[in-house]
Image 1 (cartoon, rainbow, N blue to C red):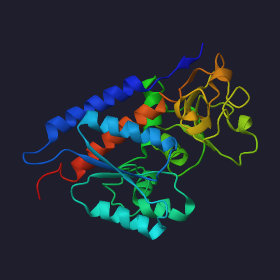
Image 2: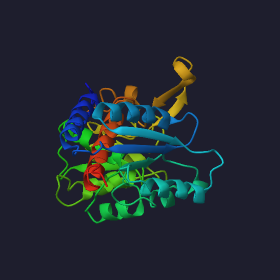
Image 3: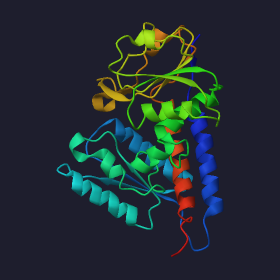
Length: 297
């Protein structure tokens, strides 16, 4: 029997803790934490994430605003938008949708944020601190995926772990966090990706597999070692006329094929996603704390 590692209970606990931190931490005459989400127009897997952010922020007592970018925006104009948000004292945290079209220069724009406001941990300073093992903010997806595995009893020290995907916002941060010395990590990590010639061989011996490739059904009985736990971080939309909007969110894992084969699989949606959103709220409260808890100027 393959376990279903749901993330909703963990998410609710994290959001409750965030709300309590806000309620007890607002200074006299001050304001609660504030988060701004910057994104392109139109439907995408991020649209669902955006709605979750808005609901979670309201529940945690965090002021939330989303900014829709103009379709004709240029890379310099995007950096100007980010710099203006960085300079605004009433804003504690900024998250920039990713991926963006290459011509918009996501990494350059995210790196225009100061370390404290780069709440998703994707700018140059944040990633540099992560490589050094001294992170301030960590990409929410990476931190949420690892939190979910730990919540379900995974102890990483000494474990063989595989990460399928090497993006700078998901796959590589997960690998770095799992391999960091101390802090409950100390795993032996294999990173596989789109140019790995034999995925099954690369994943041999892995006790936990993090799927971060964004390729539906990539993780199945032919690639995942028997008895491994699969933490599915992939998120893509596939056509499905049976659901509202005609699009359904799926991950990398083939849940039907892995039933009775894998130790556990996280569902999409309902697994890593809710924990990611709750982790983002945690990081927003942390940013607010670092920047003075909204005290009057």
